[in-house]
Structure formats: C-alpha cells, structure tokens
Picture (tube, rainbow, N blue to C red):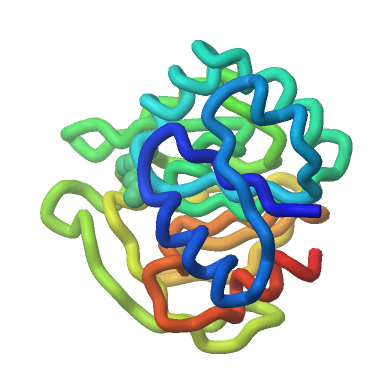
Length: 196
Ligand code: GLN
C-alpha cells in the first residue's frame, strides 16, 4: 500500500521527500484516474486552498476523496490542506474582522473545526517558533500565511496551541496542522502520520 500525495498545487514535493526518508511508498494524485490506484493514506499539502479547492472540483476529485476520508482514510493536512478539511471557514478581512463562510460544497469539510484563513495578516505572514505537539514533543513550526483554528468542535481534539491559538488538531485519523512540518529537519510528525 502507498501514501497518496495530492499534487494539484503547492508544497507537495517536500512531503514526498519526507516519505522517501521514511521508506514509505507514495504516488501523486492529479486526476481522477489516479484514484484507481491503491492507497491507504493521504497527504493534503500547503499552498493556496482556493486554487486547490477549485482544481479538486474541476478534476472530479472532491467527492470521491471526501467519501474516502469520511470512511476512515488517514490524512495529514498542512496549512491549505487544513483549510480544505475544515467544516467551517472564515476569511480574515483587512479590518481584522473575520466573517464566517460555511461552504462545505467547495471543500472536503470532514474536520469538525472552524479555521480562519490568512489569520496572521500580511506583515506577520511568515514566522517560525517551537511548541509542544501532544504525543510528539517540542517541534519546530513554520507558519506561512497560515490559518489558525478558531473553534474545535466536539469531534476533534487540540494537539497544539501557539500564543493561545489552536494550530494542530486530530479527529480520529485526520491530523491537521496550520504549520509546515515538511519544512523541518524532523521526521516525527510524518512518522506519527504513517502509524495512524
Ligand atoms: N493562505 C493560504 C490559503 O488560504 C494557506 C497558506 C499555506 O498553505 N502556506 O490557502
């Protein structure tokens, strides 16, 4: 069996490298025919969630992937991937007020959280810090125009917070992070994912 890496747009190459380092086989998902191959886990990389969502719909990947995830496919979602998974999405607007948009038809929507897109604003768009990730320990966390999780629903569980904001959650075998573990010189998060 293999890990499928969504490769429509964004930072998927770095995830493939991590899987290589762990000796985990992978292949890319770019179009519907790729879903015919056998896979038992899925990586949703960072990038631009609006573009990824549009391509998922255009390629006819959204509904089949949603069904697989709802049926228990393990997922590692980072940054834009977290936005794709989130059941509720808010956009950060210029005056700092987020307005809620529920658009399950446009995204996968399987994760019981609300995320705020581009939550860290333009100036603070990118930063790196260290924090505790439950079950793993201290990890480096790189945020790039990252979302944060403004509400964790009863089905999900918080794994990490940075400055009081939730940046990592788990719901069953869905593991979703605001930050980019694929950019760290650290295999522990991918290892955890491969054991889900
Ligand atoms: N800001 C991006 C979005 O809204 C996410 C950024 C990222 O994946 N690094 O999709």
